[in-house]
Image 1: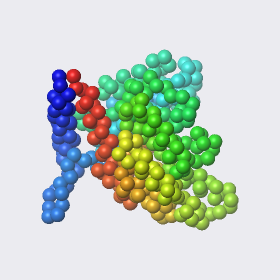
Image 2: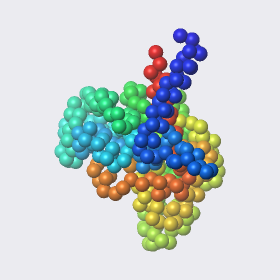
Image 3: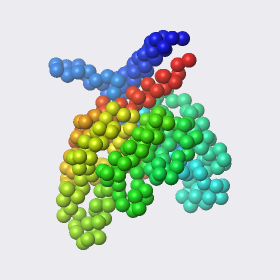
Length: 331
């Protein structure tokens, strides 16, 4: 078959997929009605319908179908199902001890096959009521120490777990995020799938508060400048790196708590709005590990609206993933 015919076939498949998204969005009541000066927004999932960080493996509290049912009943229509890759490297006794200590169900008891067993269970899900994608969450330190490449080749999305552990106890901030972004873009040349920087910001906020407490300062004495994550130069550098790329930045539900502090809110509006305006794309999520995630409503619009993160922005990764699926389905 000629390249031209392949392109025509791909275009037709993409059209069908996007039509399905439009139909789903309309049926869920998210399309806006036409009116004077108001465009009809079709094919977009609302922010609270998207959850691109759901732990569905070793730590989940319920059988997989029942676990997903909780998200569907709570309004979700797009899920990225994943787990921490390092949990699947435990030897048999270590795994048993870990399961017993945390009072988990041992969903994947054979260490030799656990990774494949998990991914196989995800691939066998047959849900017509929701879009499901598969991924791994990988500790950012593995970018320095070495990657488990075989596992990475078997998923649709890779999320990088940001934490102080990779920075000798120092919370990551703008300079560290840019360093990782460059590494991730390099890794993406070998693994051409969307990648997400998971929860890079919250550790910084907590570290600022911890430092103030150690110094005997009250939380309400912390100025906006101490909460700022990026300098203007760093914002410009990050936009140049990530605008138009397949690397996304996560805004997870912990922001709802932080948003109650007006100084934090103002600092991060100044940090993130220019990134969104400059073309960087974001994801929204709960980072759900257990049923506690359902004790409060998932309302990402509360903070995303002020951060300049629109449904159009947050849907970008969904469209990309569907396009990749369509291309892979070509004969």
